[in-house]
Image (cartoon, rainbow, N blue to C red; front, side, top):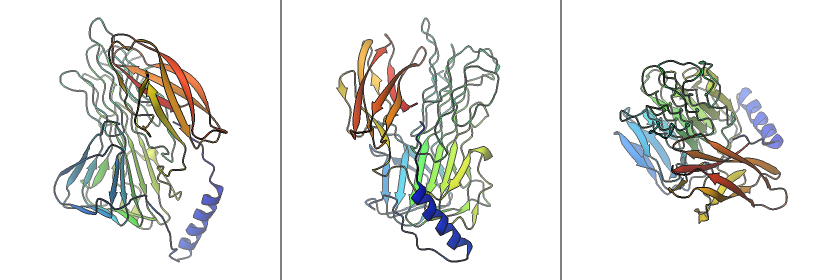
Length: 399
């Protein structure tokens, strides 16, 4: 999903602040992560799993992970990213996982991390295998134990690996990670599913984020993509997305958004701060995934551009539903069906694709344009042809 944003005033302000820092002065920075502090001060000292609310937003006063503890998340029904917001300091001396899953031993697809996308399902005779989920999902293919032209494609995000398959997923997203979206799944084969895409996480603090990982490889944020199914097929999921936003970011940036065994494309990392003093920027993986700057924008500010699904096949969805969420149509909903899409705060004509991703068979895309120049929000109804006899997930992305 690509959104261009012109921020000349913010850019000038950021440049001025950086100039003060270079002169040895400490500027006063007023930044609001968006946290209301309702979850209080959280100190994690043992391995912990956090259940995400419906919107994925966690509101803390402060947040600490100690004792090399591991923190994971239970996805919500909308499959939103993790939005971890803090009014005070964030300290990570442990591990945070939003990684994608490997193709299952029962030949099912790997599951995406929170905000990431599942791998494609295997074929079930006579039904063909499915494409990987997500905007960069690998296409379904054969399975011959090698990375040849006919094999299922790997999930993609930031670049194509060039492993030889013509079924590799497409590049998507942007360096600023606005909007925040996770990794995509690998394509299915006639006998094995694809790996799941890494999830997506935003960590934002009004004051400081400190990743204590410079000397210990066990302290890191993991948004890796899931492995391939078996025998050398390059159909793993892509890495996900990690975004850190705070006036001060320091410590060793041990952040991993690669695929765990090299069978999927890498994900994206974004660091936004005014003061990077003491930040080790050489610990992330892979190197090409990182971008950093001083925008101090979380991407969830109310005035930023946003796409939403309003209804699918006549069924209304919750207000504010993220357009990249999972919408499951039941069997029997085949044929021409309306999908209503809403655009906010673009201020222009927005080209979109309504994307149908069936469990079995190829991905289907229908192009449309939402005129957001005068009406805000603005909606459009797109009639799409839903395939028969297989569950279908519906997404909307900008083109």
